[in-house]
Length: 230
Image (tube, rainbow, N blue to C red; front, side, top):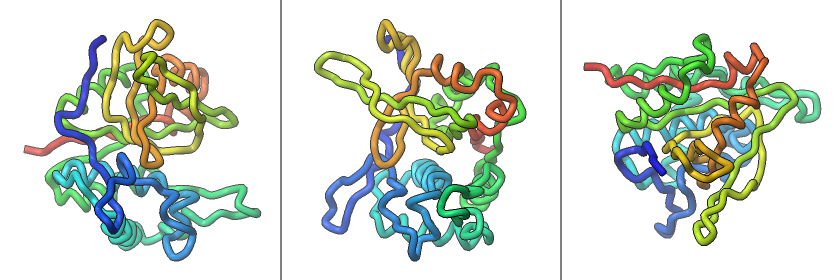
């Protein structure tokens, strides 16, 4: 088994008593009011904040700090509330777009890094780009989208060394924090991710099948490229 990892431990979130409550933040902590419906549509905000905090070297973050971070995002991206509003009996929302995430992160990181979206380049060398970014100690924001289709998220059972299907998702941003090759006989390449304050895994071959044949997914299901500027 071979893995490509971030060089530092990933961030942890603490509550008001100092206890760790998440590996990365959880959008479900923030109810629809007054947090612009972060619990329903805020995965893009959460992923971008997680990435920024890690890059800034802030490994232990309080839940209250995330509340300030959410407000900062809304101040920089002025139509945040509109894009997160759920229309037609909560059946439709535009959601946070890759362009908005890039604008926020480039502003937040103050010209020290350049953040761009890989969508127009498809998936041909996506795994290599993920590993290259991790090798540079930069987490990878990963958009997962396919019309009318979901992708499985796994958890790892250390006793039996099995990957167990746990849940599924679509129209969701996660943060990739490691790539594991030869992970298991039935899962040759697993991507370790942080989502909803927990650690999950995505089978990369299943991801390619999830996006296969979809021009929309080639663009909308992709990664953000973060480059440190000299």
